[in-house]
Length: 334
Ligand SMILES: [Zn+2]
Image (cartoon, rainbow, N blue to C red):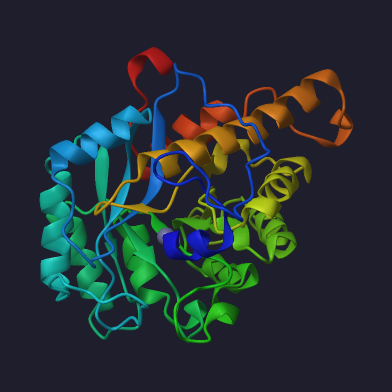
C-alpha cells in the first residue's frame, strides 16, 4: 500500500532536496536496462481525488519507462479504509470507471477490486469477465480466504488472475493475520487459479518463501486432471527500505525457481503517479536485482543450490507480467 510505504521509507522531496533530519539515500541503485518494456503490475485507484487525465497518466508512466501494467478499480464500499473516498463506490460504477480509464491507456489493463465475502461475489466475477475486466484485486479482511473460494473458482473458470495483498495490512481493522502468506495455501483447492501475492509478505518473508515452496512442490496435475493453482510474486514494496535488499535476496537466493513468476510493481495511484517515487523504486530494485545477477555470475553465491540467475530483470520487469495476464509477448521478444 502506497500510504504504508510512505510512513516507513525515506524518499527525497519532490524537488530532489532532503529535509532536515531525513536520511540521505546511501543505496545507489541502477535503473533497469532501457531495452526492457517495464510493466508496473500494481497500480490503484485510491478514490480520494480526481484521477489524472489518461494523457497525463501516460506521460508520467512513459517518462519512467513504464509501458503497461494493471490498474485496480477503487475498493468496494464494504472494505474499511483510512481514506475519505470521493468517487462512486457502487460495484457497477467502480467497474465502469476502471474500464473507462483503461480504454484510453493502451497497455494498462483493468482489474476489478473484489470483496469475495459479498453475497453476489460470484456473479460480480462473471459479469466482470463479460465486461472486459482482465483480473481481480483482493485485500483479505477479517476472514479466512479459504472460506470464500467460490468467487476464486469463478475467476479460474474465466481464466482471469487474482492479485492479493499479502503481509501486514495498514487498514484500520486488525486483519493482518488473515493476510499472512500461509493463509494462501488454501488456494491449492482452486484448480487452475493464477494468483499473485504482494509485498513479499512483509514482515513474514521467511513464511512467504515457505509458501513459494509449497506451490513449487505441488505444480503437478491434480487427481481430477485439472491444473493446480499457480502462485506468482508481486514485488510491490511494503518491505520498508532497510529490509528491501534482504527480502529480495531471500526471494532469489533461497533456491526455488522464482525468476519466471516474479513481476515488478510500485503501488502508485492513477490520481498521482509520482514519477520521482516510481524512478526511485525502479533504480533501487534494479540495483538490487543486478547485484544478485553479478553475485551469481561471479560465483560470490553458491551456485550449486540455485537455479539460473543470470538474468532475473527481464522476467521481473517485463516477461512475467505477460504470462500472468495472458497477453502474448511482443514478437521481437519471442
Ligand atoms: Zn497496493
